[in-house]
Image 1 (cartoon, protein in one colour):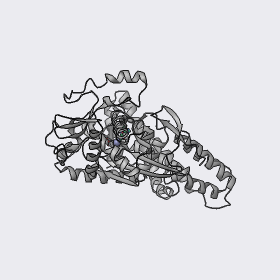
Image 2 (cartoon, protein in one colour):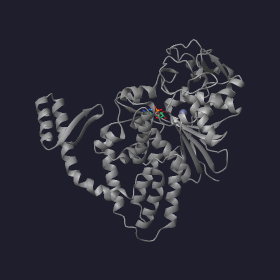
Image 3 (cartoon, protein in one colour):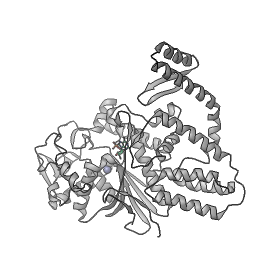
Image 4 (tube, protein in one colour):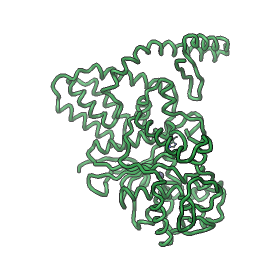
Length: 472
Ligand code: AMP
Ligand code: ZN
């Protein structure tokens, strides 16, 4: 296979060409959601970019098998094994059982993914399905001296590894030694970074789900699930492991520690990490409570695919700041784009040389560390190209295998939206007028504008990310 598909590998700190363990096939793993709340659009940035990575690999000719876990037990409020189980927190909040919460938010997650055209992985496995496998893996780690029992829990012994901080450079390693000083000490741990594989004694005795094990009734730690589910479905060698950058330490570091100690050899060669989506207050996170969801975007009049395009326009390794202003611009650009595409007639002769040139450019952009904004630029170049409409629509259909923006079918839908364009322009002008009045401290005028819009059935809302509006 001639592909030279490259991306930034967090493990080597280089842009590496992917060479899979088995020629032509990619074994890919994604850390799935912790299903105690809705996914926020930050989480979904990671899943959108991972979806583009998977589809790009398929586009350049790989066969991909992708596995995702669903975290429905063991993820404690702090990644350092302290605090309450997040699932229990969700159940208490909503006066439901943990299983009800897990089912509800797993369904909600896949419904959001469907709206964003994120493909469901070949295998999706909830952690609670795999307890016997976790127990087997922990038994082997104990037998081989990589784990120990203390105070009722089983811990991984990080001192048994030559290099525990696999993702860090030497200087970062020195800094990392002190990084967890603020974490409440667990007196059972032999080393500061040892982590729990199996809990029978945690501070939160009211954990809802517990299983029998050789070490007593309890529940698994969070990290073990990804090692186990990955090995269960992809075998001893994984090619690409993905997640958001917050997963690098400790989650992915601990996954490598467990998996390689268990297997006795290197486990996964390429680590793909997506930078965070931030709002003005910093990283968007579920625990902060106040976060944006796909449904909220829809309520505010945004097609979820506008958010997908928003993500594709920026590079996955750059932090992305969310604002409604940029989203509104993206909405306008998306509407214009699909309208322009809808105007193409599937007529004329396909021009194979133009087709090939564009396919190569598109492949090149994706293979170059997933340059999605360049891929979109190529789409715009194509629309300007002097070639038949047939060639254009054939290529757009081809590109949309990766971009997944419904480029050829959204046009009809957008005609309806067009009626709203005039209203949007009017409301935006009023919002600007109101902002100017506020700046001048003319609050009476600002309030009058809000009232005037209200009488026309338009509700304004001031949010951290700017002013948004919807029909009453
Ligand atoms: P969780 O449901 O909290 O386990 O997170 C699911 C995925 O979303 C993980 O891969 C996280 O690394 C990722 N993630 C969490 N917060 C953000 C954010 N603000 N921006 C992008 N990805 C995120
Ligand atoms: Zn994971």
